Length: 487
Figure 1 (cartoon, rainbow, N blue to C red):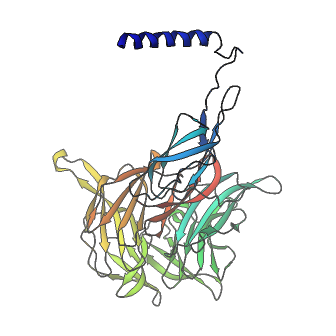
Figure 2: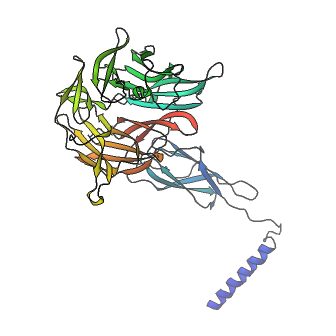
Figure 3: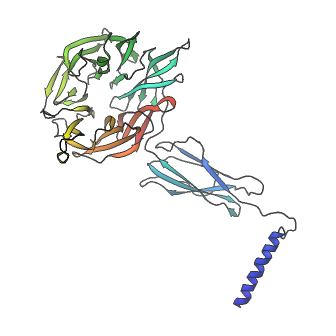
């Protein structure tokens, strides 16, 4: 019996080959239909796979002579990040699929086409969703190049951006104009760009600064020129209207202007600190904007430098606090700085690259770089980050942060709502790479490396686990705020 079945199978195979060679049994010389073959891709070729961005995928049948066309497609979600609630409707339907990622990580989907009683081979698409959402341009279309940008928040999720952009005037001359724009946390949208200065003349390394109060008042400070002479200009905004640009300092040395600092007190006083004539940060002059005048008026000489400062709570009141080895707060009534608390840093230690940020609830984090010696390497010195946390009453003992500070570029501090602090460090060799460390319960986590979408960057907190950055998108002459959600 086995031999008969085997022989029968061989004869059937030979007959099939003969029929195939003769064009089949139909006698017409035609070939069997091909396919169906499914093609798939992204609805937008420039699709950014990021948090909050809807992902759109399409599927279609390969067309051409002899191909069977699918009339329906089925999508299947093969892989998604842990904790993701994303789901894809089952069943057969048209070729378009959309979904919005709710977690960062890899999403992998499969699509199959149906042509009646024949299915296509499956096609898989894999997408890695990054933690940063896509940028929204806020500069004007006239920009040839965007430069010198900063971002400031009010602690409630609102923000103000300030930047310069190179344009052509009506005579086709290149001018450097200064703009601001506001982000409204209520609707999640940026307002239109506001022209603050028609031509700053500044194409050097000095960035403008801006501050934003919770009542909507704001101030800006920037480098301007009278011919080739550098000057320091400032403006303030009240009730939605900007004052005219005012020259605070004329014919000032570059080292003084580059070290000037724009400040905001909890009660809304807007201050400009200008260092002394020698350009050192130790002391200088304070100017305060007066709504009644309205103008910037000198309020104290000499003044200790508030270059490293933040708003935090001292003795039950919100204060503008400056830090060095010790902390002191600004008393607007006496227009003076008052020391408080124990010394933070020992007298024989010189703090460099200082950074301080408050959380709006009375707490603050102070980070600095100091030189340390390694006992097992003789007299060789290393530079480490250290921090001290203020809990509304006292400063903690200094805590070391793991990474060596020598290769670090710009650094930022942001707060999460549960008291956790995030320390961001940018790598000079690759400005889009950053390290992120988290501080909780008196300790810093190991740094996590990730790549940001814009370069260079400035970061402010918006809400719990949600930050905003601003920067250039590379070859495109735009700026865009980019939100990052999650860790």
